[in-house]
Length: 128
Image 1 (cartoon, rainbow, N blue to C red):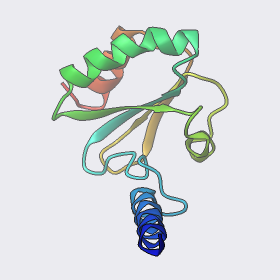
Image 2: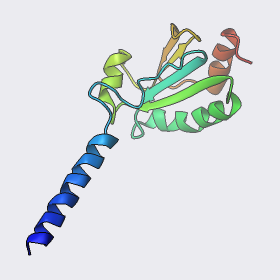
Image 3: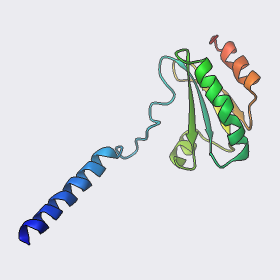
């Protein structure tokens, strides 16, 4: 009986340690590297439950494919990452923010953004 309780305690400790190691450091999220340094970045902040955000989803997927290896296209669901909404000073969703290769904000748009307008902004920033 004693061996069994030791084994259960050991498994509990292993589970707790694996959880702690899998969790990001306090203040860090999977988006701490956004905007991507060295490349133009478009960040779309919204929520999967928001209607205009849902309409943006297929556009963002096309933009991600079109600009693969030329620019970064990132979607952040602020429902799950509210700290990112604060970091990027979001007032409405969806919000699209374009950053140059140095990480400087170049352009910001609130609301649904048409594909043609996204392409025009990338071209304006030198991304073909």
